[in-house]
Length: 288
Image (cartoon, rainbow, N blue to C red; front, side, top):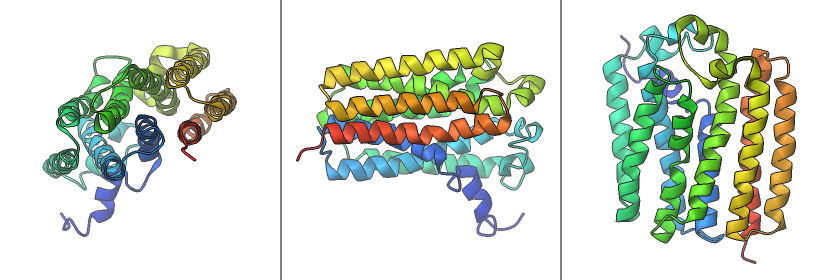
């Protein structure tokens, strides 16, 4: 096997550093939580720690996901050439990289406080367990949403030393949002998943997928409305929610024929949902 340096592009693909969409879907709610917890002005060291932590934990999650799916990916059109599926990276190398990334993440969180350090163990448990959930439940996206949203209580823990009610409302809104965008993503692979027995919300929802997706989008907006009420956010935030509703409508239009391309574009389009959410909170908490 070539040296690790010669296989650097393969390691970049394994950690998805060449595909930043997943990083941004994790980054936006993290930044939103920091701004909300810091009342528009989060502490600089927490901002640096959490931004770095997003990159590290997203990479770690991708590594353990590909390790869990190494025997399935070769049978899925979108993933058949992933480094673990083709053998360009060994299982031992993947697990070593996963462990190294967790160590880096733990070092980062050690610069916060004891409460946040304790919360970080929940993040590790969620990130490590999610990839295996698709074998046992049609709702692995719920676990993914919790894993992607766990930075929200951690951000409040780092900024305030505790997790208020508004943080949990934002956390649950993020779980619903993850259900939405990861179901669009799963709809791309639904035909392959049905053949090899992989479970997902796309498989579970079946022909009711667009209706259920619409209901979940409405539910997310309602949960975010509660966040706005509890936090006392002004018109910028509510304007952002209106804009998010328009984006959700566009996603429904993209997926109306359920093509792979349309569903994948709807998944990517959620980058704008994250931008709008963060912008609404940042502007509403801006201290002139």
